[in-house]
Amino acid sequence: MPDSFYTELGDGRFASSPWTTGPWDAGAQHGGPPSALLARAVERYRPRPDMLVGRVTVEILRPVPVAEVVVDVELLRPGRSVEMVGASLTAAGQVVARATAWRVVRTEAHTVPDRHRPPPPLPGTGGFTPPEGWIDGYLSAVEWRDAQGGFLQPGPATTWTRLRHPLVEGEEPSGLQRVMAVADSGNGISGEMDLRRWMFINPELTVHLHREPEGEWVCLDASTAISRGGVGLATSVLSDLAGPVGVGAQSLLVTPRG
Image (cartoon, rainbow, N blue to C red; front, side, top):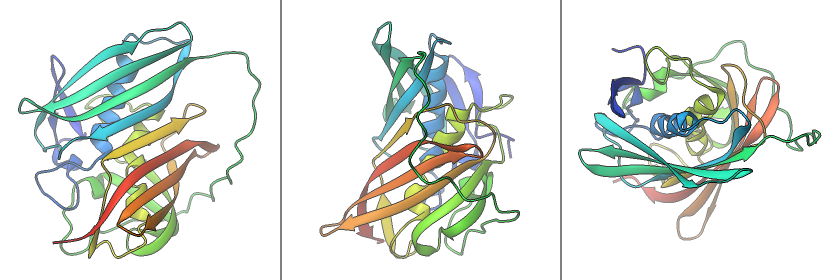
């Protein structure tokens, strides 16, 4: 298998490797890799060192196939202090995901510490083996080290993650790309009901950052709320080894598996 989630083909085209495959459909990607690929497009579009990305929202319009995809990017709202960049992901002529991101200018504002609790220490060992019936790919492309809970344990979870492969062949992923590649797993690790019997479908992912993530490791301190009618909300405090960097949120449709 390729040693990356994607291989760049030129003209905005990317070949998707089996590492992008989600656990429920061998032909569909997990939400993490395409979210990270869209974030990469945002970072590379007319880059401004005087700005940082403060928020990224990804709308998952339909299943993203494990196939060739095309990324397009544009400036939606120019500005000296804040600007919005939009990116889209197309497969077989159909838009399958969109992202919008706010970039904000750096200033001399002093630091105010994040009020979220700091992440627990990185466990020395860990790992996750997909159970029978789950499709491997993305799950083995990420290293998982649970500090509390995890995929098959209902309830809140705190898990350290690290990408085992580059997002794009031959490139070192940025901190933003590493966060976006795993933030979509907050609902999976903190599911309140058995993942083997229930689906927690998130049509979107929103990540807010107050500083640039550093290093390979990203921690998700995640919890899920579900209300009558099957509407849920998964939220994650996102951290690197130095402490919290932001938060992620996912709206959920909670429904029994077929």
